[in-house]
Amino acid sequence: MASRQDEKDRRRRDREAREQAAARNAARGRTLRLGLVGAVVVAIVAGGAVFLLGSGGGPELPERRITDLNAAVRAAGCELRTFRSEGREHLSGPTLSREVRYRTNPPTSGTHEEVAPEEGVYEPGTAPREEAWVHLLEHGRILMQYRPGSDPARIAQLEQLYEEPNQGAPSYHVVLMENTTRMPYQVAAVGWTAYVGCKQVTDRTWDALRAFRDRYVDKAPELIP
Image 1 (cartoon, rainbow, N blue to C red):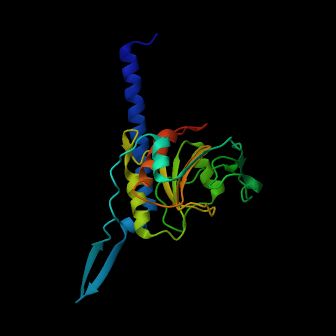
Image 2: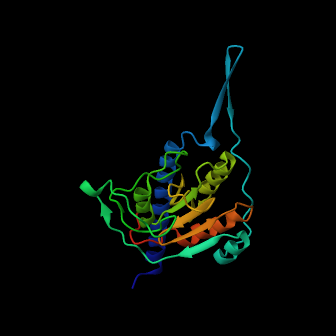
Image 3: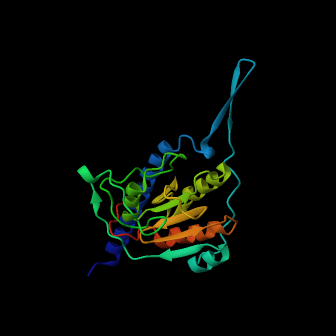
């Protein structure tokens, strides 16, 4: 039987591994964030001088008020759905470019590309196709998605949510991207075999997304640190 000290050491190693993985993901995310509004820098040339102005990052997210997932979803008027797995076979070689018909929108499981895409924040218009990002779900990631054409200020708020600490580290196993499947929601958080979708965005929406993230992060068949 493991001693109390052994158990403490194991927990410490697990925590350090999560923090290191989150730091790597955050670094990758910064490289993908090139054109996102929260990081937009506008150059103004006047009188021969160039001034750099930050965008301000959009309105601040409301503080968290509801932590229970079902209560947060009800308060926000969103939809929480869970599904049976559609499998997790890989596309590779001659099948790599094949399109997959998923039974849910946004997809929550199913056949996907063999190599998972980069994690982080994707600039609008640069998200990988769904056959690629479903692989991230299999790794236990939470995908925060927004409808194409969304208000840049709304995207900036989602980036704030992406950067929030969870599981003891900022941006832990969260990816932010534009939706690629014409989902019927303004915003959604997607995990393996589950999603929460919101057709309208209000101050209460954020607690629903937060609670879903906390419930479903790392809940997948192939957890990758």
